Length: 93
Image (cartoon, rainbow, N blue to C red; front, side, top):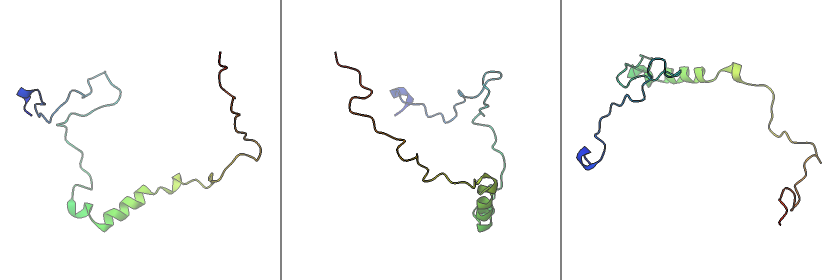
């Protein structure tokens, strides 16, 4: 569908959402802004087993593992009772 028929013009650059100075606390970059370089830029390194090992090591942070367990924690016996059929319902007039 073309723009003449009421469809989108197909412009892939849309900076309407870009942050304006003093307007938003969360910065939003322009579409044309350069992306930062990373270790994944080199295809030979990025798809290697060495990189996968590094990613796994970075993903598993031993400091975030808690020792205690909460699975299976339940209320004490007799402390839970199901509501009755009429409980919580407004009286019919």
